[in-house]
Length: 363
Image 1 (cartoon, rainbow, N blue to C red):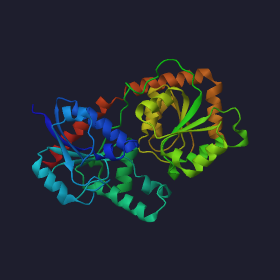
Image 2: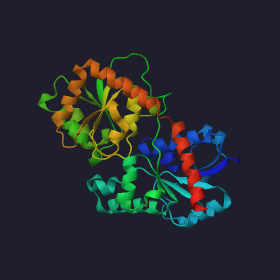
Image 3: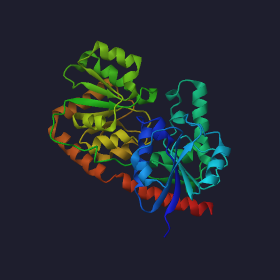
């Protein structure tokens, strides 16, 4: 059988390398170009640095003429021009929606519909309207790849996409990087993500700066949330309780997971929740809200709190973990087992099925 020729838009891996969108795009590109049953054409911004492994594994590297984020979002003619010169069987667009008039079958990845579910997640009205407009373009896709069952439901009920055109394939975890490692003291708890309102880092800041925070392990904040002014101000006032790790690469993040008792994610809405899977693979226990995709990813390896839980309740959950060794051991072991089953190779296998289905449907 001839290898399947797929086009993969890898721009997000270059333009947003430290955010979830860019990280999953990069990992998926690395996984796909290693496969013998695929011939992968990678689309990247012009003048971008490309990993050597991509050059070795890809059928072709195509530099798109506009390197800004989402530059081709409204530029259907540009995609037509590119795809006439680079033959592919199916195009996978893992970020930013679907431009009009793409002349080949399209699989688009829907990560979440947070701007619709939680409008306050994007306070500027104009920016929010653009984000919602981008979400509606998934209706143009031949098939929509939802990253979780919760997101698949959102695609149907929030965006009006026919259920028959939605497929689910979750993300994986790179256990070569994210693993328990040698026995080390777990001496802090961890937040990973941005300061977007729906992430609710402010709830954790409130808990860790209150008078009742004595005795809690320090809270390490990794990701762009560490750059927020109110987070920096709180950390300056409570340096023994709040530690700002800032933007970190995968290896640095893995080190934080290995020494963390728990990952705290009080988010109001998540399309998947990649840090949950990475924490589980590292023996770090997720403490999560019981909403959207988080129960689907954390399953019985996590502690869950209702979205109405107070800051004190989040502190109490951490105290429970630090005082109950049996519970910690059980949840950590279960998380490692579950994460070991969620590999990127498994995600790729499912996506290849979706690629073939998109070709058949378009045909």
